[in-house]
Length: 85
Image 1 (tube, helix red, strand yellow):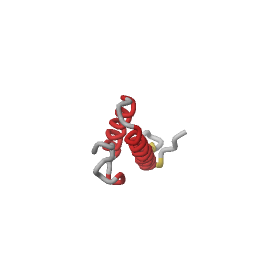
Image 2 (cartoon, rainbow, N blue to C red):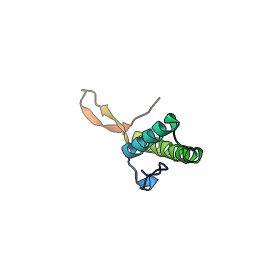
Image 3 (cartoon, rainbow, N blue to C red):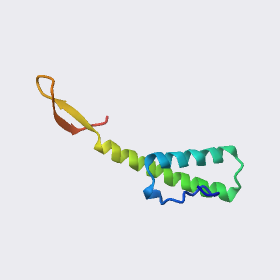
């Protein structure tokens, strides 16, 4: 990450874990109150982009999660999409 908090990697190339780590670093910098105003604005902007990226990754992962279905004897019979309430 450079001094403005922007990752050198393209946002779309970041894994969920990488994006979360970057977001945590940004939050820590903003909470410290030591960043100049312009840098704080850049950090906040990058943070909102990382948050949206993480939410999209979670949504994609949720769509891939499947529930195991059982037959009458209790044995695994297949899968179906998991319905989240």
